[in-house]
Length: 570
Image (tube, rainbow, N blue to C red; front, side):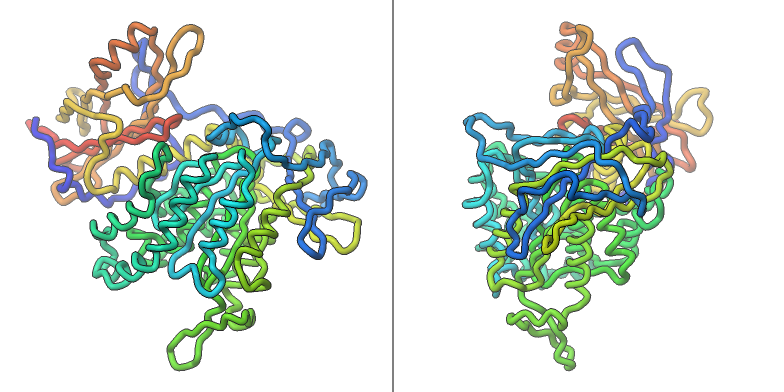
């Protein structure tokens, strides 16, 4: 059977709602490879699930207030007072040990308290020039060089890429330094590129410039992000039991906002990606978004929708506008008012205030002449917090957004806390895996070319005997980079697999999704890693199939593989 050239794959078809929801087609399991449905929903009942809230209280100078008592706090959920069942004051200190964890824990549950002596920062760099007049990139370098604790985790997201979280602050500092020197040239190159005008992929010469920014980062991983996968996830969120306002911000990103989503990414899309990237990390996270003039949705409801997604993921959004305030001169041109006339740019300032206020972050609206002073406020506030928790009085499994209000009786202070959470049952590891797996597979399916990270070889595809209008696809999967864990003496792992069929005109002709549950003895695993795992799946068709694309995803390692092959016709 002849393999299709990677350049020949141009599948841009839609992926079904059933796929987004993880409704998997299951075949008969073998003793070693079982095909399973998604994880069972975790138990979630009023009185048994603690809702944690990390609360920071600062004075007029932005310094943390550290002597509050539990009696000075009041928590309301949808206006109803709640009994505080957990209260602790937590001061972060530099770790004494020279050995610290270099990776974050995955979020086992959005409701799982995570009290650790460290912070998690994602530094999101927006489009445009981020240096003058407020020196936005310098501010982030100031954070990494002078303000982070040794054990703090940090990652960088810019354009369509994100690094792993790491305690290797020097590696992150190197990326920021190279970005500071090169990002204006990259922006100019993209702005004059024909690819921007026609929404084509980023030219290879610009990609090389971006690669140089991420540079020789050693063991620090860098992954490509794509907003289109999250657009799909947002459109399907309603079917997961999340009320419309929570999904609206993601869905609207797919309605023509910026052809750059298929290129370097726009700021709105990057914000959504950043929130979802942080969702799988346990505990509260700090997102610092540095942009030239900010980003804005067309409606307040969309600001609130994104903020609620972030609050639900326990992501505090901190916003810095580094380029001064943009304002129209009335003649079609835009100029800068570096003095900070906030009324000149109400829309981006409004969005920034909304995102910060509803998530427990900060936006200082050009209060300071240098962005480093914003960073100092963020650093000071995040070094001390109160960990509060309560058991909801009302059964929260209804999919609606539950608003949380935290009040402090002491006058003259400012409370920073998340605005609420979505009360749904599937908030645990099952949803995290389901969402991330769908995003990774959907992006790989639409990507030009193939991904060799997890090898897929010896592919045959042809009519499935006695299966009606369907094809049988056989393949060999390379498990050498697939993660396994020990369980009852066996090596246990899993792979999410999807197969997409297209017609002669590259239109969708059918698809199939599976989860392969793998269980091997040590000897059998060694043999299969050496020879590969032979697997066959049946794909139901809706039309004549010419080609198939196979995508596999390993959740623990976050690795993807894909391959393309022709369908034999008898």
